[in-house]
Image 1 (cartoon, rainbow, N blue to C red):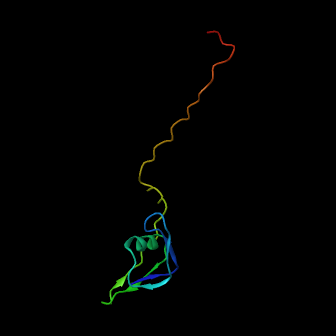
Image 2: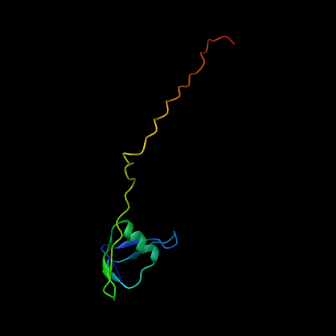
Image 3: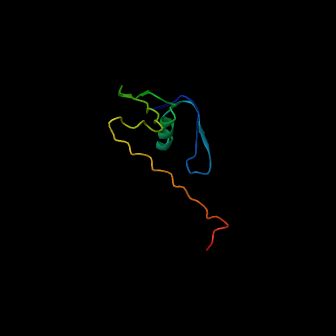
Length: 89
């Protein structure tokens, strides 16, 4: 069983948009469950066996780099100059 905390608008084929209402659902497409977990609207549910199904935590955008990893220095900017108009050829 899947529980959505909010309605989910998703596109199964990239063209049309379907809305899956908030609440308990026996079946939801796997991709819709993955999207709901990524945006944090998937609640924990109980299976018939009493086993907990944890919600999927939302992804962190870009985790901070480790302090132990050496950082590469930024490259020096390149300066491009235009030739003078009065310069002799």
